[in-house]
Image 1 (tube, helix red, strand yellow):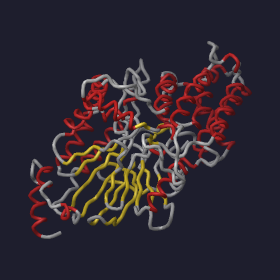
Image 2 (image 1 turned 120 degrees about the horizontal axis):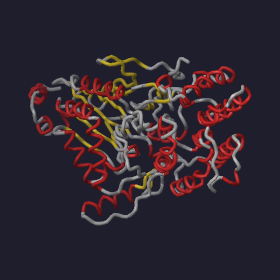
Image 3 (image 1 turned 180 degrees about the vertical axis):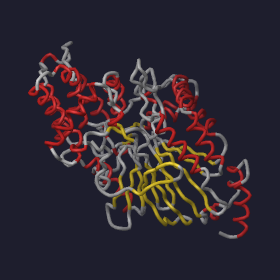
Image 4 (image 1 turned 90 degrees about the horizontal axis):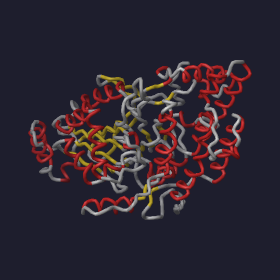
Length: 499
C-alpha cells in the first residue's frame, strides 16, 4: 500500500467517524488493502430463555451469547492501519420465529419492530459487541437469512441500523449475495425448497408499508410454517425440538415418532411446500422464476418415503390412522416411554426412535461429516465456482462443512451455527445399531426427565479469509475457543457427544 494511503488509513484508525473517513479513499486504492474477512452465521438471537414454567424458545442461550460477545471483542481488536477487517453476519442473525406471538412472518411493521426490540433487550451485550466492531473501523455486513425476513421491513431495518450505530455498516437483502474479490458469501436458503422466499412479494410488502398502505399477504416459506405450526407446539413438551436440523421432509418421521398426532398436520404442511416448489430450475441449480428463491426440489420419491415412514411409525405406536385429524388422541413417545414397564415395551420404543433418527440423519449420516454435503447446496456451489469464484460460503444448515467440489484450488465452506445443537447418541453417528439402541435408552431416559444439558452442544464456528487486495490468500473454517483462541476443524464426522 502506498505511503499516502497508509497515512490516511492510520488517521482513520483513530477517527470516531471511521466510515466517513474511509469513504474518502479512492475506490481503486481500497482494493489494495490487505484485509481479513470473518464470516459467522445462524446466531438465531431471539426467544425467551427457558425457566421452570416455560421451555423457552431461545436456542442461542447464555453460554452461546457469552462466547459470541468474546468473539466480537476479539474481532474489534484486529484492525490495523495497514490491515482492514470485514465481519460478515451471514443470515439468521435474529430469529423472529422464536418470538411470541408466533407467526411464520410478522407483516405488521410495529409488531415486527416490537419483537426486534425485545430481542435486542435480551441480547444487549451481543449488540454492544457489534457496535464495538463497527466502532473499531471494521466493515460490518449483515446478509438476510430465512428466520430474519422481517429485518427487510422499513421499521425493523431502521432499528437495526440505529442499534449498530455509526461506522461502515451494510445490510444486504432482496436476494443479494456478498462478493469480496473471488469469494462469494450467501446464506444458502436460496437452494432449500423448504425455505424458498418469494422476494417479489416481500418487496411489494415493503413498498406498501413505506407508504403507510395495507400490505398484501406474504407467502411465508413452508419451513417457517413448519416451525410455527408444528414444531413450536411440540416445543412445549420436547424442549429440544427446535434444535433439530435440518428442517425438511426427513424430520417428519421423527416428529411423528415423538407425537403421532403430528401426522394430521403433515398434509397441510405439504400443501405449503407444493406452493413453494411450483418453480422452475435450470440444470445448474439456479432458479429460473424471477420472483422466487429456491433450488432443486426434493424428489417426489424422497417425500413419499418420508411420509410412508411417518405413517408406519405412527401405526407401530398404536395410532388409528383413519382417526388422525378427527380428534383422536395418541400418546407421545415420552409418555409411552414413561409408561413402558417391561423390557419388550422399552425395546419397541427404542426401535421406533432408532428408525426415526435413521430417516432424519440419512442412511450415511452425511449431515455430520464436514467433508460431505448435500447436492442441494453442492450443485449451486459448483456453478459459482465454475463462474470464477475460488471460495463459496454458505450458512443456513447449522452444519459446518469444508470441501473442494471441483478440485484442490476451490473451496466450499459452511459456517455452521452459534446456536445450540442437539447431540444424538454417538453410536447413531457411527452406524453401530446395537450400541445406538443401548445409548438410545439413556437418551430417552434423560429426555423423559427433561435433562438436556448432556445432549446439547455448542460448535461455534466461523470462516476466516485472508485477502491481499482482491486476491484470496488463505481461507478456512474454525472452531472458536474463546479469548481469541480457535482451532481448525478435523476432517470427517463431528461426534459432539461422548456418550
